[in-house]
Image 1 (tube, rainbow, N blue to C red):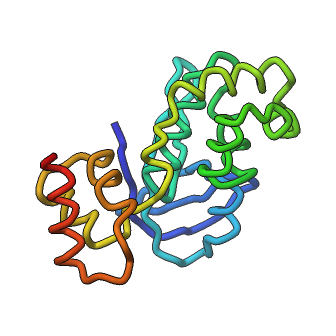
Image 2 (spheres, helix red, strand yellow):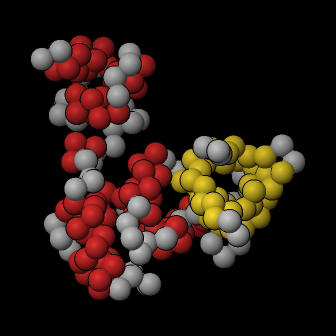
Length: 184
């Protein structure tokens, strides 16, 4: 199973990139934003989700874990295939799509090309139970968050511990406060 690819963008198609890794060119379907922001000749690193059927094999690429996880939640919904999931991800940020699902805004999904009213309602219903409210804020770039991950805490624990900490304290103090919260 392919989990990630690092290589050089050697070409673009209508909805994907050709990424060369050790002499092999992989066609990877990506979101519109990633397609626009990628340049031929540029190095890239993508997280990969494979789509395998007896007559079809495709790779879907993501710039971060949050996007890949949301893609996984979308394709698990009946009536939402990988290409529709990528279309949904291309419309807005993961956080905004999650907020729309949590607040029951069917029109956000219904206005996406290829998503009908019934599918939009199904997306809302199925996502409501799957969205982790504590993981809404992306703290993965925070050094205190990274320290907690290194210490063996999982993403949800680390996210929860650092999300309400003040920004005006140094990393060591942040880690101490986060560890204090986690020990409760």
